[in-house]
Image (cartoon, rainbow, N blue to C red; front, side, top):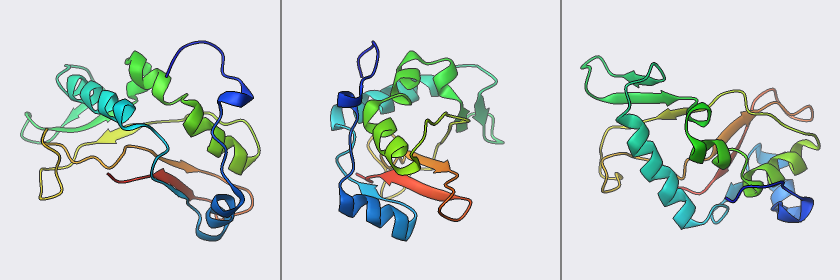
Length: 147
């Protein structure tokens, strides 16, 4: 996720089958969209954000457990870059056939369970966007893998 200007050659493109799957199901599963090292950096950053005292860090009723982090792209350089990642934007632009903008991000923490990673949070590769698509129902989903 380097800096600089993004070009069309930087963008990840979906193949015909992936596009058809999106138009048929309303989502496309892309297990290797974002490299594991970048997911690890995002998880580490998220853990740090959970330790901040900010109004965007929403606590559970116990006052200790973090429930959500609102709009981390506004105060985290890593998330600001992540939401502009060419491998995310390429497929979204391709499917919607237009420019897109981010309205809101909410990182929701999940209680530990059998499917929990070692750091106590349960995260499926954290890439899900809800968007409006004129050729489909008002709300459709696009997501990556759940490693």
